[in-house]
Image (cartoon, rainbow, N blue to C red; front, side, top):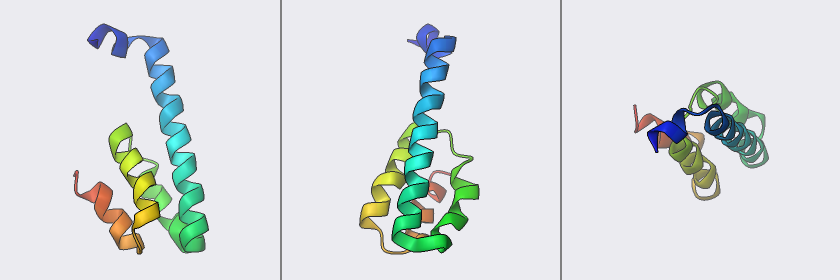
Length: 77
């Protein structure tokens, strides 16, 4: 599996998933929290962990404040 993860093809696929998740998160934050939600994007766009990005995307549906969203990814630091 390590050889596969190091392949350029896998890296491109992973980068595509990351970009898609970040784009979805940005849209979700803007729709739910307005322009205030977009202030988190400078932090979120630095995250490269697919699991954390997926948790953030899912959290947009269930969390009620930007601080709750921030806690999702700051818990892993």
